[in-house]
Length: 200
Image (cartoon, rainbow, N blue to C red; front, top):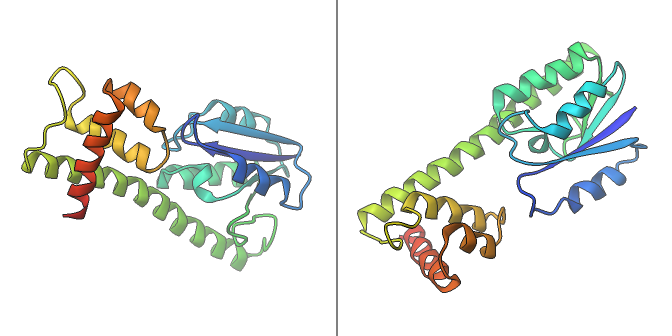
């Protein structure tokens, strides 16, 4: 059996690019599983359903390594579980060298494992960088005395986090406004202040 796996971080993100890539990958995919949640761990409903069905010589196809997950150590462990314990293969479309159906000799395995570790590190590092940028934005906001609204509403930490999510198109402006419980004009005023901070 050949399974396709797709993941987007939020319900609003578009999965079309992943779906097109899977359908045009040149393999007849029997079933596609998709989760709409963060890749920080592997406690995802559809992913776990796929893993339970996985048998020896089955294949999992994903568009890119970050669709599998974003936690460095967990990606490595999950890769080992799929390929060594389950005896299945993984094909990463954006990185042909990460295709365990090919180059099964010692050198090929060594190279793919090395590339996997590098890419997994990059994926987790990006996740940590986002957190760092949020922390720096909060610190800068506090230092410049920027006010983010009435005390009973969301605090600067929440505003910066929500601003990052809208900037990364993880949530829409309308959703941000609803979460923050402010008017759209207030949201845009806060956004401009945060963008100004970024430039300074």
